[in-house]
Length: 184
Image 1 (tube, helix red, strand yellow):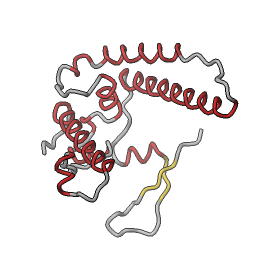
Image 2 (cartoon, one colour):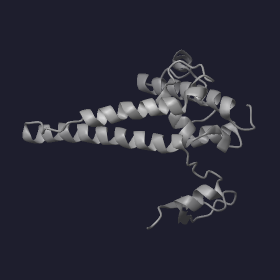
Image 3 (cartoon, helix red, strand yellow):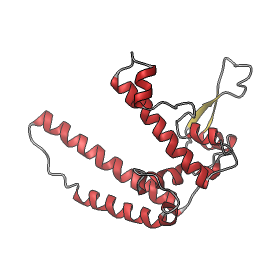
């Protein structure tokens, strides 16, 4: 079985003109982000696959209906039921962790995803944790503040800035509860 390759800059200081393709697993080892195999991780992966299948099937039936003017009989009830059952299993797996965090809006699936894929104990600093999750610590504006500072931005851009800030706040909280060394 062939592994996926990722581009990697072996020397970021000198900014080389080339990149080296290395296997995904080796790239993860290089950056000390080896996957964690646990019941939570496996259950979260299963949940994500079911959600993807449901989404694809709904999109497919919509496209089919547009093309052929009728909707095929595809029963998603079983998949929806499986999704709910997996969510209950996730809740059981993170029940102790849920008690540690008091952020409204962070639900079982959200916390499970963070702890399954990007457990804060895997990262040496908050900055690396936030970067891995796709957020920067420098996003500090909320909607009102962003409107004042950047009046030329569209409503959607302001919304994204605020969402980035909220997500960064949630991830910082998660990192501080379960996380590593850096307490910035």
